[in-house]
Image 1 (tube, rainbow over the protein chains, first blue to last red):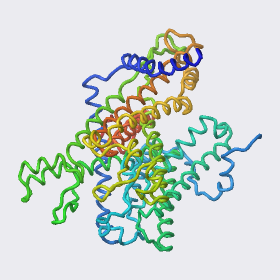
Image 2 (image 1 turned 90 degrees about the vertical axis):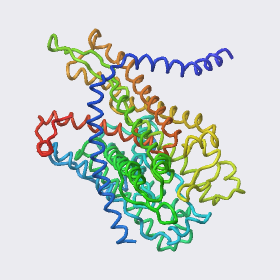
Image 3 (image 1 turned 60 degrees about the vertical axis):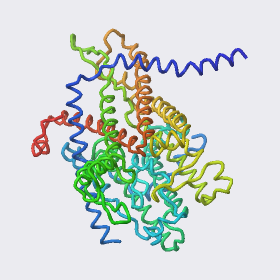
Image 4 (image 1 turned 180 degrees about the vertical axis):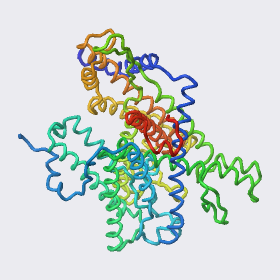
Length: 70
Length: 496
């Protein structure tokens, strides 16, 4: 019985432990500075939107095709 | 060889399945970029409407109560699936079979010896077979549920099956082209990323006009375009136009667009959190450097895995409720699992208790109609995400042991540790990084979804993480190729 209790306790402790480890880890992480972050966001954002617009242009092609088929 | 092995099942099919040949020579940087983008764009172009749908499943029947509507609308974004097109299921079967086979192999439920070439080939074939099988099964589930119309003739059923299965095979091969080294990263990831980018562009900047009411008024799909249009339109006041642009619920509105952009920014930020391990060379003295370990160690994969499970649960419920019980409120299955209610004549919204695992349509609806959903849904996302991240970092060839072997090969050691201590030190860090990252990402997804993004929150998170991994691979490759690329010269890019 005591062993069971022990296991239960450990099960309850697991999330607490996990959160503790996690926050400690995040605190130790190196975070990007404002300037770096802006640069990265700009690079990823431009790429993302550019590819998106090309894809969207292709999707627009479907409208006349749909009229032709259906 | 004792016992039976699951991958042996794929053996008779190996010669039958078409396969992409490995490239004969090394593919150059430019070619890889072109292959990756073209494969994804071919995918986007492949979203043709299905032929052979029952005519009454179109606009005429939408008003009637019995129509079977889209039951998986909230997972479509993540898997690049477009309703009523050839890509009805998107790349879900490919992603799910790859992830699930890997997980099964990692848990030693499927026994594969990855050191043997024959085993690797069999494993690959069985993954592909599983994917195609899923396309066929899903197609028939949807056909017999009445999703494509109720009274389908035999010819129509065969036609639909052929279309969906052929498209599935095509997508599988498209993904394989990128996977086999013609492109960057994994094919599934490149395709989802580009498709999510496309949907994002369409939701924000889309100019195509869609009929919104019976009076023949049309509104633009893109939220920003719609704002400008409604400022100019004659049948709305300026204030009404602005309010409408922020909270229309039939098409993307500005509120969801802003939320999506905020989520994308948050993922960008998280992607740049890294733990820097000081390392030094064992061969040359005084060469110090850092080895970064990312917080999002497994990237968007943990979210993808949670969504794969979500998809399976909902498809299973759909089979039971729609195909077996015909969504009949008096049947036992309906009472146990919960049925579907139609919304806007477009979506099938699951009812309690199935709704516990369904992201709500809006935040207010979440509070008033499904008050338990936040708890169950978040718990589901977080637990599955963390479990997967913990498993994946151990089996994907980037575990603590793998990194320490890599260190040894390159003559690197952690500053202040002996060579034997490296694995132990890394084991303290890598699992924590991956599980913490997955947990935070899951929370982000939950926040987005509970605010009523209908799958867009999850998809933008997967998309931006995918974009980051792609960018990382591309820059690494670019530097390796010595920065020589005709593409960059044409585009005038100075490098990221």
